[in-house]
Amino acid sequence: GEDRQGLLEVPPSAGKAMVERDRTLVREVLNEENQSRELIIKLLAVFQEEKGSIGETAQTRRQFAALLRQQAQPGEWIQQEDGHWIQK
Image 1: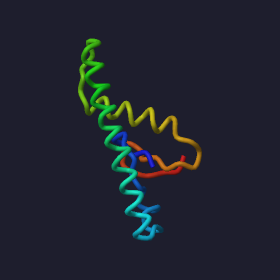
Image 2: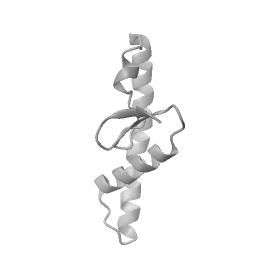
Image 3: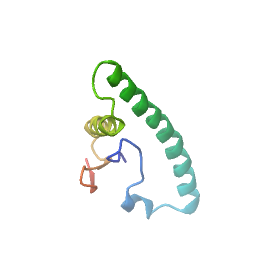
């Protein structure tokens, strides 16, 4: 699911149903995707700074996460600002 930091995470309820082999594969995929997302967030912060906005990574991260939550499809897990997970 889409967590509140703009990264992919396995929601707590979904992780319980996976066997260890699946958990390992999912962790590898999440790590690769999240490395890419971290780079995107950093680049967006730099771009905002160059355009005269405050290039704060925390603010950029929140904006990126909000965009990903909006783009999530029905049935996908998203983490709300308060930390609770819901299915969209």
